[in-house]
Length: 270
Ligand code: 15L
Image (cartoon, rainbow, N blue to C red; front, side, top):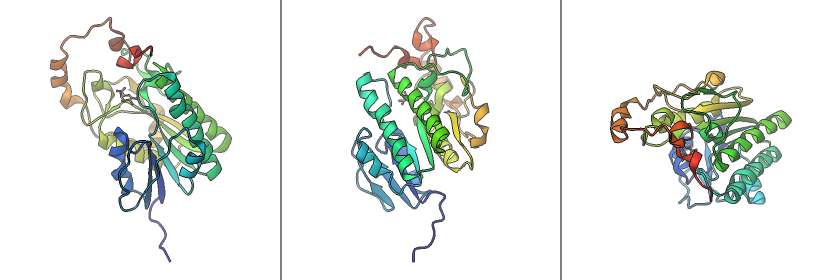
């Protein structure tokens, strides 16, 4: 007889597993469950030991229903992650996220970690500090779709008790790439810690948290998300001198400099 799992979530689903952050999280989450089910529309390669590879377009409802079968929790990184035409965003991020929550409801999945984005509040100014209780100010169709996802998660918690932590991820890359990212950067180790804290925290209900490292200057305040237990360990500060030298002058009339969303606030029209 198989011995009982030592893991909190024996089978985890990671959507968007072939994407930038999905590729980072794939081996790290594998180490924290018995079976990691990975999904994407892009090539996922071969299944590693303890993995199940299940490609699925998020807008394909029957495929998404199958995807959540037997899954204990979901890390939903899938969907479009940049500003794109509305018709594309609507399929993956709006219909796709609806399909995911409906599948979670039908299969009784108890917790979802939802990759939202800082672009839900991208039209706040860079001289403002935003906390997670303030009204959203999306900076484009992508930000709007993430705001929809957050509202959907709220609804599925209120109506059906499915817990979600919405991660308003800043800029998660190996290193910050420009001056804006001195405020928005989150290291990959901190990303892993944030995702794992969101899965691990005993009671999350419906929660929202900004995903950033322990940067010296920041536009976001996670006071209302202390229960998640996320304590970032890294900081953008060691990269400051090089990035400031690369971009010595800022155009204070440029919307990308005025608003927190940076270049996203002026992407399009398509
Ligand atoms: C996001 O939400 C994007 O997915 C990512 O590609 C970055 O551009 C990031 O925001 C950012 O704001 O830097």
